[in-house]
Image 1 (cartoon, rainbow, N blue to C red):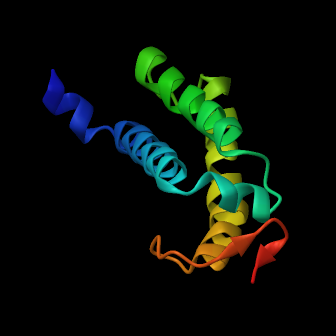
Image 2: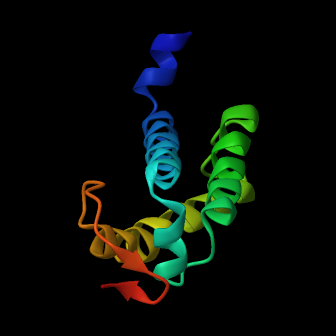
Length: 108
C-alpha cells in the first residue's frame, strides 16, 4: 500500500509542504526574540504558534492538498514567514545566527 502512495504525485506534494512548514517552524524557533521586535514583525511567540498550528494540522489531519483548506492557509503563513519575516531577521542578525548588537530600533 505504501508503494502506491509513493507513486502518487500528490503524496510528494503533501510531503514537500510538510517539510517546508517544518523548516519554517524550526527556523522561527532558533531565531532570537529581540530580532523579531527589532524587525517589527510581530513576536517570536506569534510566529511559533501560527507555524506550529499549520504544521500540527497537517501532521494530525494529513496534508490533503486538494481538499484541506487548512493546509493552504498554513502554507500561506509559512510562505509569508519565509519571504517577509525571515529575510528581515537575517538582515538584522547577520544571517547564520551570528550575534550583532541590536537595539530597540535596529542594529547599532
